[in-house]
Image (cartoon, rainbow, N blue to C red):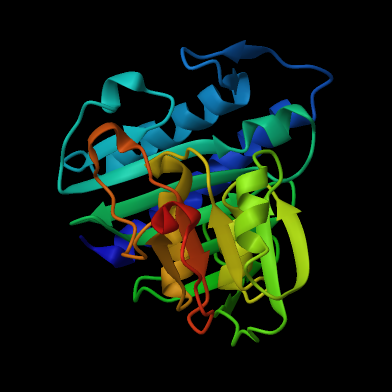
Length: 270
């Protein structure tokens, strides 16, 4: 893969999709439908998916494309693929909270090598550069010309005073039980893949997820976090989270800054 070509394409398509999402978000009302699994989908999800899919297929027609909103893509099997969640955090979007993101990633041999996470309502754009390092871009977010880039990196955590981020819409007792194994200085809630980015920038040290996620929910954020020096591991055995699994389901996982003394998962203790 030509990463010098890939990265600007992912960045541009994320920004274009974000513009369309915000048009819907700022409209007086929008339609909300239910998918087969009862999860919500809006016209913003579908419009963003169309923009990203068309752009990726035009630029990289030989690379398999997996997107949340196209069920026919979920049966594909490939070692190398692009994977898209055009609007992660649909519940946050519907409730008109700003914690939703556009996510595009490139995966090779089970590893998300490059990715972009864009939170259009917050004006925060995170991505991996061609060399694999992670940056946050600030400024006008022009689609053709990148603004100021700040290389991001994970924190050096203090295990006696950890900063933890957890899901805003999917928090449960099991998650709280696991977090209580640590000495926590501060805990915040955030939606969507922004949680990976908060660990990537050092705004949090630890993000445990004990709940169902799909690979398109996590791949881009995982790529950004890896590019910032962080890690994402399975909850049960602390091995790296892998991609390209049958069905695209993720196990429970932990995203963290190296230096966090990981505790055994509840499942692993049983």
